[in-house]
Image 1 (tube, rainbow, N blue to C red):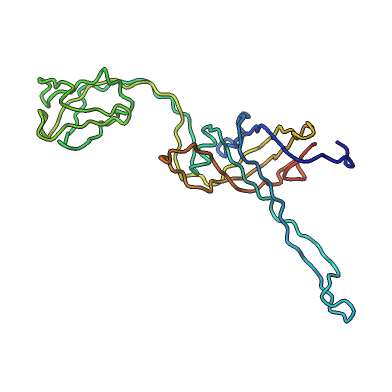
Image 2: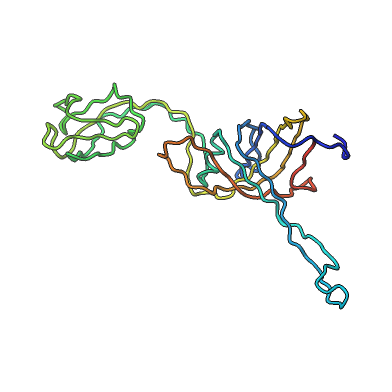
Amino acid sequence: MAQNDIASGLLFAGTLYAQAYDPVTGLYGAYQRYEVDKFEITTPSDKLQKISKSRESFGQAKNTYFVAKPVDFSITFDELSGDIFAAMLSGVASDVNDASAALANLPVTVVPGAWVEIPGGENLDLNTVVVKDATGTTTYSDDKYEINERLGMIYVPAGGAIAAGSVKISASTLAFEGTKIEGAQRYAHVMRYKLDGINLLDRRDMTLFAPRAVVSSNTAQDWLSGKLASVALTGNLEVTDGYASPFVLKY
């Protein structure tokens, strides 16, 4: 589109490609493609003026100049990755790849009427759980206790067959592969964005490249809202090495 061409209007659609920067390695990760609900750039400025005090033009502007301010940026993700989840929680993401393991005659002190943690018992294979008394001679049937296999916890009812005190638990844990996020550990997340867009009104392609965006979470996360959640991040687009502008649009 030449500079003197006129678009019939603006109605953009676009697919986002994003890279996350790892401050530990000093490298950007691979590009991931995302659905986003918002991709907003604001280019604010401060207005400086010299106002006339003369008899003929008192109160009128003699000189006007606008001083650039940092480029404001906001984005809303409708899809998640570990990097986006970490940014939402101001956290640090790492890969988790736990192998299966065996717990053999692990002593656990139970409290009737309360849930008690089984050390190292997260992600249990429920079919392998065996609960015995402290001597290891009596094996309790599974109707005498309740297991939360995901959290690794045991519950024995008050007045039941299992008294307060020590029991021995044997079980196997399942292998687990996923992401761990340590929240409230990193409040500034650096990303790089490429927006592959199109103006739906005239079918012209549009691309936008932001080589360095520094964003953080600006909303609370209600884990039990019952609504489809999105991730809203805000921050600034910065000028980085090798670039003269915080973003470049081609249309």
